Length: 256
Image (cartoon, rainbow, N blue to C red; front, side):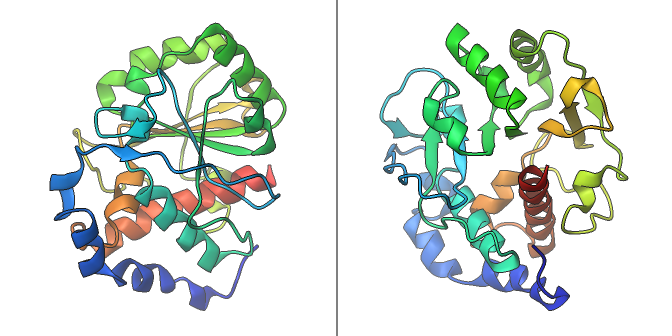
């Protein structure tokens, strides 16, 4: 899955590309984020890796800053998939990304799912049952855009799915931080809330020697860096760290 080490600098190069066009397209950066945007059609399943974002709550047929599950869509995942495509042989879809619910049977075709803003995440009973099955069958869930004060709701929802689940704080030695890039520090830049970022995991059978089923970026938001990485609004080195974490998560999820 690895290419030559010389490929690593491409992250910064791609981040710089198209800055002026990207800012203009999103109406001057942050100012245009409250507008409604139509949800793009899901890519038909073809066996290629596809970024899957989990929708929860009512389906309004659009995304906006007012719908927390949709934050950073679609630019965040599109930028991320382009980086992943440059750095690996995974050959993901780079423009098409999918939105699914946990109770959609289609989700079982995709080994990795992304859930953001879990402070407002509430599942139906069927979604909880389906998520449990998804995790037990080998699914890997990345949780991101997670404010410090939102832990209570997240824990409540997870325990509906896995009543015996334990949450483990990860150290730098965890294999997930060495699945592709060698992550040097977990003292990563914060997008909001007082630091530090906290990285937690739920393991299969609550056994840290087994695979991680759910990777939790608590008190941080790495996808925010993905979304705005082409605008120059954040330093390149901070965006690079967010991309490195994301790439490691995908490679870990696909190889475990």
